[in-house]
Image (cartoon, rainbow, N blue to C red; front, side):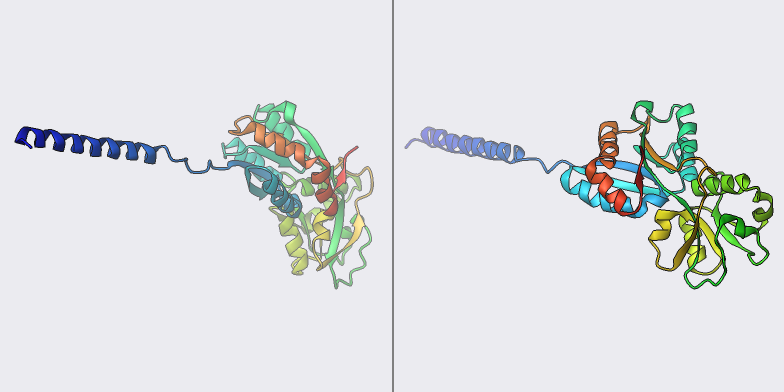
Length: 267
């Protein structure tokens, strides 16, 4: 074979190898992309719903391509965070007040606003307490020196408690005995540890503890109806997914869990 023919054959071989190499690289580049990330929704919710929401989260995430991230605190604190631009897709409040204030500032989508469940306001004492407390009025007695309640301006349970005291005309008497807490869970802890002689919480919060007992329920008509409600935030990055989760909470599956933890449907 001539030198020219040899060069020609080598050139063909080299070209073929380059083509195969390029083709192979092309195939490597067209491999399936990694699985898409789950849509993540940020839910700012009243702390009183904690246990129920954590159970609902497991059920919901098992059936939907969603990751739920909770921010649990008092409704007032959550409202302030949302006003300051905290990333939030869904807000669940323990009272209308905080939701109304956000709506006035166009920070929620009004058409998504939805009532979820109701609750009761109760007076609790440590399990071993020997105080003979039978009503909210009894907190005005001399043998009671300290009781816990949420800060009325930011904690819905505290706001409801103040309404009860004002209706019963004992607020001025009991106010100086009140140990104000940043959220309802803190009130429960104060009672469980004996740092206060009594406390005012939602019935569902009391039911979750074996260290306290309920001694009285707020009389009917002494406070505004206790309503937990939700709405999608105007600046949500995933409004459809957030609203779908909100709808799920009032579905038969969602309500079954909420009822299990003592929450009541709203007629």
